[in-house]
Length: 331
Image (cartoon, rainbow, N blue to C red; front, side, top):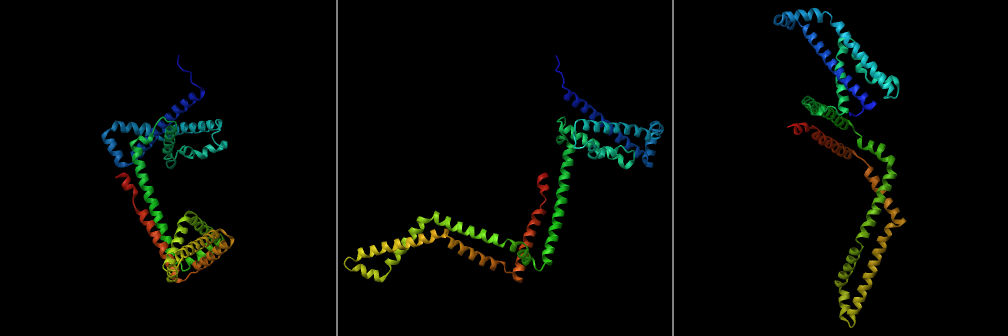
């Protein structure tokens, strides 16, 4: 027993067959428009009459003479398609407002006007119907040879167009940089200065975090280095060498070395632990602010260096953009 079709599948099937019918009708109409346009060219008209005089006479009397009436018959079907599609869109609440359909499908509406300029819009109707069939999964235009050729040259065209626009824009930016005499000062006044305190706080925080993390991760190595440094310094001291020659001098120098090493390690440890104190934070903030002010000062040489750096960066971007990627893609 055959399966019963649901109303939705039956409706989709009706839509499908109607769309296919409209595609065939539009193609026939466009073919007729093209042939009649060629028929109006005197050399082609004469050649057509010379090759098939009977067919030429029949076409001229039956079709060319009544071309407007025939085209109006096509237009009547196309107009019916627009009205039917509008009604279906309203019934299915496809758009936010009921009157949106003719604006969305403007090419269908204008294509119904029987004038030469608007008749060409009927090509868009075929394209839109093909996209509909593509969405339904009934066809796959990406597998078509014509689609591949069109996609290839469209890709090349868009890449060349965007590359030229980008290069032109970068050329203009470079010229603006060359003509500008106060780029660095403008950047500092309008971009950096309003965010000065935030930048200083960020720099200070990063310096504190970096110093604290470095010491935490290398504390044992640091203290070992300090002990070794104290030991080498005492070993090279002539006074301690003389003391070590005295009775009990060796024990005395070892005790002194141990005490001084512990003292030095304690001082270093306390100093580095103090990196997290408020006093150190204030010191780092002051240093960052002083360095920031020194960095923010500009002079003609700074302006020239900044300008050249930016121009060279833009030139590098232009070289990258100028590479024709489509040649590697389609070679």
